[in-house]
Length: 138
Image 1 (cartoon, rainbow, N blue to C red):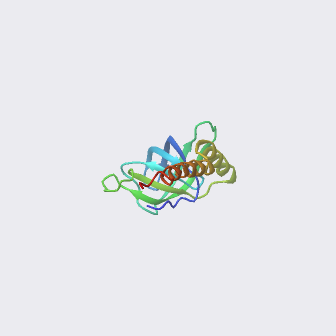
Image 2 (image 1 turned 90 degrees about the horizontal axis):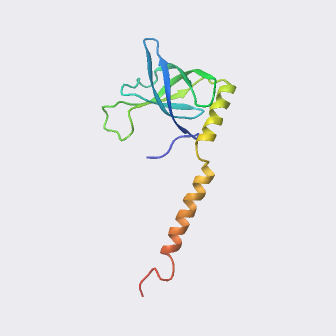
Image 3 (image 1 turned 90 degrees about the vertical axis):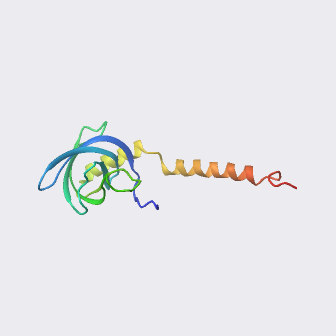
């Protein structure tokens, strides 16, 4: 499956309270970026459902209170290998909140350059060991 995320994400385990026009619920988020949040729940909301989210992040005293929309939903009963839950796009983050989340993600997630360098080094090492003069029987 192709990676479609445009922004880096940080793994989290935080309680998220969310409400629709009809009900108020609580679940745990598994990851977050400045653009969205994954909420793990056995009963995800339907696609395009608008929600109001409230959550805090470890080490940040601010409480986030933001609108979102369900952009993908995976019910627990599906045969997907993905965990049950829903992806919620954050709609109206004020610049200060966005900056706080972006900084949180930057601190909590590995830098892409470091990941790329590690992968390149590993591939290079594997390539060197398999492409040497002794790798093919004569």
